[in-house]
Length: 199
Image (cartoon, rainbow, N blue to C red; front, top):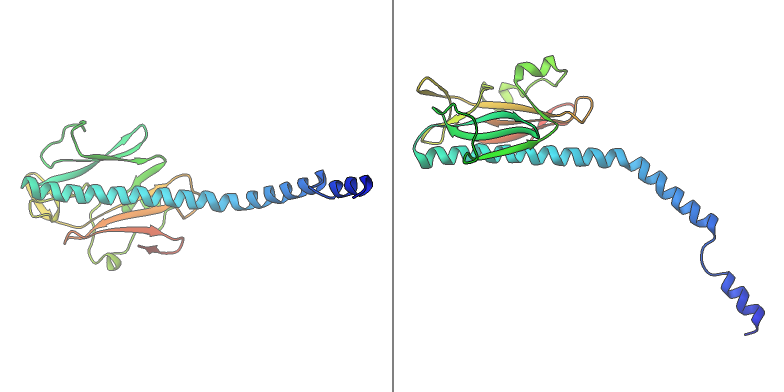
């Protein structure tokens, strides 16, 4: 091969600066368009993870009530990093300690009662017909047989519960979740899809 043909072959290999710039620009446009969807997926995943963690602490409370043969309550406390859920004996009203079973729901998740949903432009709560019972919104307790109950003054009346949560990073009517406990003790997670509650 002559020197002229060798130089021409070398010049035909690789990308020009313009071609490379066009490819990078297309990549940036695609990334910019996909970013809101990625953020929504990440927020949904984080919310689902927090709700699964909460249903786990409810189940733990139930097992501790059976194991210890006493009524146990899951209580909530706002902490610097989010909402803390912890388990104590129903008769113990002291502050949370390191030895208590506890989980922390990451910020910016906020807890709501059914009555507060409408006041905060939230969706309507899960209907009693969908739940199969009329729920209470207080801190759920479990008796020594593992059934959920509303503890008050030494008595524990069988009751179902529901707690609502919102990821405040998300705008509009999405980012809502709930955890229900039926009077029979079934723990169920609910998520608002923008038009209805689904599990």
